[in-house]
Image (tube, rainbow over all chains, first blue to last red; front, side):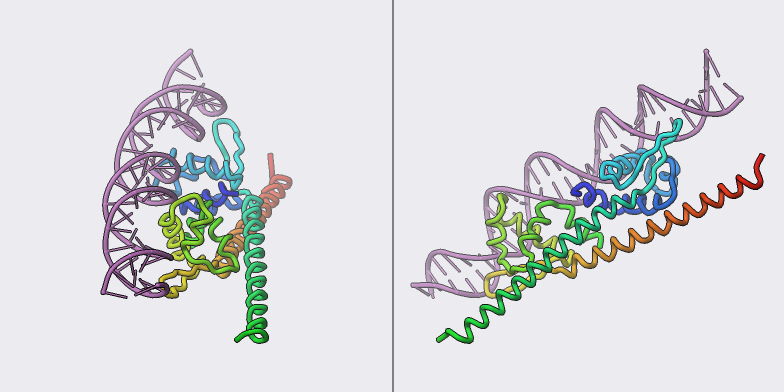
Length: 109
Length: 109
DNA sequence: ACGTTTCGTAAGCGAAGGCTTACGGTTATG
DNA sequence: CATAACCGTAAGCCTTCGCTTACGAAACGT
């Protein structure tokens, strides 16, 4: 999960992922869409693959890559949980605050 | 959005964000929960604030921080769109593949 | 069999990032 | 008014990261 976030934090890797959405492309062809060298793209692909955001299929001398929607789904779920717990704590805090106010109203000065 | 992803890519910042979920804490007290120095935490808080993941409220000499659930919501939406477009392209690709198969069945060899 | 295509990997470089120590500025406290 | 508390910022260090060039390995084409 940490790897997923780190992989997505790099703008170029996001673009690569968009490019690989749906279609399956060989490493070299991916590189032609960008202004950096082919090895740079290859390294990015390794990072994306390590994060399970991309699948690799070797056929002959070519390495075909494709975006893995499930990889993003994992992040989506993680984020949803994060968000829910944040909201839960928020309402807890609101309740505690309300309690504080009530106590102040009844038993103060 | 890029800033949001970069901010969340750092594990320590995730923990800080969790710590600030619901409750509002002064910078110094946040620092006590970690093994790094207070300035380090302060810098992390600046990054989180720049990404709108945290709100700052200055009262006297203390700077109170609190997690901003809306900040996460932005990321959630962005990710949902990303995911949807990925699925859309995927079904496009599937349809094209089906079309290819059909053509092969009728007009080949 | 030999050259060519396709590709990952190693080495090295410059920039960015996270951390620490040192400092200064504002607000509370006696 | 002097001292202490709280905190952001600057400077410097070390690691990480993205990139390039150079290279080696595997499969393809003739």
